Image (cartoon, rainbow over all chains, first blue to last red; front, side, top):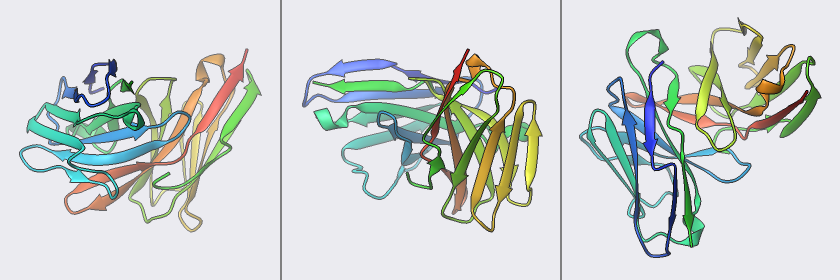
Length: 118
Length: 113
């Protein structure tokens, strides 16, 4: 199946700093990627849809100035948590669809990034 | 969750037993999918059922869909310790030219050896 790589897997930062998370589709092109946030023992919350070459679409209640998304190429989307605070600590996961072949309707996920803000 | 609830929230069974998880959703869908997540990892796709299908099988997995009740169930037969994970249902909401995927609240399955 298609492979999505996400880095870093874990990051610890001080309050007020910005953190960038990368999501790469390794063997396919992804015009659209999805960013999710997951709190402990809870479900995935869709934060935004990243669109190659255009602005991301944010879900209601998600601050676009806080969570900057850039999708500059067909294989890379980045999520930057700006001026991070302890309440931003969470597990962030990206995903993408491989539009080739018959598996186009399912999502392929990165391995996630555990962000801890001190 | 953004889309719906799953029950039970947690399920603990013995190896060899069957595990049934249920999912309810809120909106009209094109398809419903089930994913598995091992602790601290990304999700892996298990099975997809379309809105015009009522039941689907894949190996030890059986999925049912009732669009009138907006609900689905996932049955894992002859469970193994390796099946221990969290299971989520996901529905797609077609918006403009692309799909958005929303996940249920998940069921944490523990299969005891």
